[in-house]
Image (tube, rainbow, N blue to C red; front, side, top):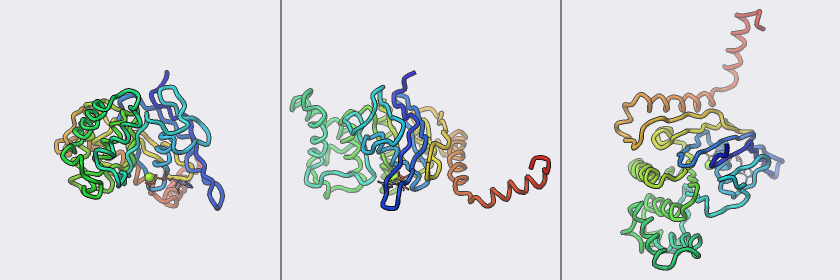
Amino acid sequence: MQHFLDISQISKTFNTATGTYEALQNVDLKIQQGEFVSLIGHSGCGKSTVLNLIAGLLDVTTGGIFLDGKQIDEPGPDRAVVFQNHALMPWLSVYDNIGLAVRAVFKKTKNRAEMDAWIMHNLELVNMTHAKNKMPNEISGGMKQRVGIARALAMQPKLLLMDEPFGALDALTRAQLQDSTMEIHRELGNTVIMITHDVDEAVLLSDRIVMMSNGPAATVGQVVDVNLPRPRNRLALAEDAQFNHCRRLVLDFLYAAHTPAEPQNSEVADLKASRPEAA
Ligand SMILES: Nc1ncnc2c1ncn2[C@@H]1O[C@H](COP(=O)(O)OP(=O)(O)OP(=O)(O)O)[C@@H](O)[C@H]1O
Ligand SMILES: [Mg+2]
């Protein structure tokens, strides 16, 4: 069976000044069209590396990544990335930042009026039409992040890749953008991979949460299915048993990964001591 996104047994080794570093080993993940998948794991485990490999910004060392059956070996308009620090062109207005991406993707298929309507439509999706003529330095961090999301959506990518998109925002703005992201996902049915450090955010937004083990040679540790009906309401879910169960599974994984090796070894030693026949 062909998967929409097939990350097939990939590894990634970086060459550094002090030798090679194997960041990822045997990462294997299949994602279906329309799925919302979160990647979670400790800092430095390799989440951004996975995302950058999917984006085509890095090359795999072994294995392969296939989107709709086609091997990924360079960046392309079928994959749009939203970065944590919004990366807008400071010399272009909000409208023109989106226009730049729209022209790059649709120059052969849309005329000027159609492009204008498409830019405005995507600004509407993130409630930013009122600020279309503002420059990036005239809008807030949350608004910049909205523009970054609109720019990515405007490319109509097969895959939306988000690297801690709400990480730098205050709690209220973050909640608003999480809600908009869920609405957009429901409306467009797009396939999303999002990196986050926030367990509640991962459970609220995702169909699946992929938890990565620590590096070096990080890999997929455990996957949690979030079978909560949509649309989801954050307040109602705070009391929901299934929501809290998923949350607990993720927290258990993250804390277990922090457990130092020594207590584990002494536990094993204790166990062996109490069962000499098993030693
Ligand atoms: N270009 C590079 N050259 C050498 N090592 C790298 C390079 N990029 C990443 N690494 C190493 O690979 C590992 C994974 O990095 P990565 O940025 O993917 O982690 P992360 O999970 O996204 O972390 P964070 O949550 O802090 O963003 C780290 O040990 C990092 O130092
Ligand atoms: Mg990262």
